[in-house]
Image (cartoon, rainbow over all chains, first blue to last red; front, side, top):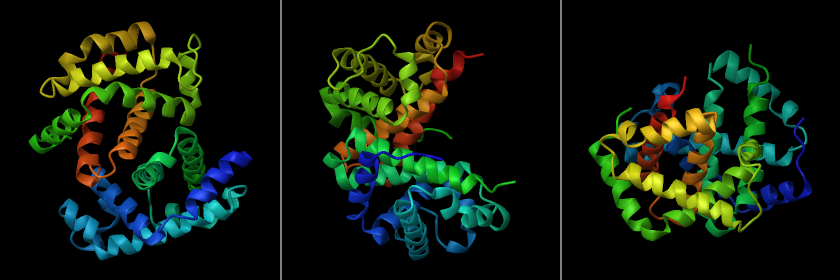
Length: 147
Length: 142
């Protein structure tokens, strides 16, 4: 089980309190689809993903991004129990959605980069490290039930 | 995955904007790499890795110069980086997985310092550029 120090938890929780989940969620998912276009494979039903502006402006992308990041918010609330928190979602991503877990790492890195653009000076190496640890741990928790 | 003309133009334009600060950002990227990916520190047991370390700063300058060389040779990255690839493969023997960690931390550094310039399209071009650099660096392995 991953252990987060008090400082790491504080870094994560304090930043998260100021994240606009709707805005950041849309941006994170949008960037995933722009920077790693093969990830669009999961979103055939989302309509126009033909250009950067189409993707970033796509209402389904924004809505789904918000959903994903809201779920991530659960991780922030349960940093000491990520395994159980994400057990059901792990099964879902394997059995129903058939998502390669590599994508969890890619999305995690997108979260980091978007946070960097929003929080700039505050996103110090130490704050990044805490968030890096969290996104890695969530990716691992989401992968746990794969078979 | 090819570097399009638009990708090249974007990378060159950003590099021009970074100017003489490339060394500062490469150093910060190294610091971020050591903080977020502690296993990377295993390659630097001989370094003082505390904040503000002169050794890390000097190493950041080396990395910056290599990246600037890469930006100047976007049409032939394998050729331009072949000596560095040999070095990393045969002398330093760095596992190539670590190149991705540094690449990611460089993106975080640039996103943090140039948030207005780091839109999705620029992000994508830079990511592709770094992937090509990493590929060129790994070409002498095995």
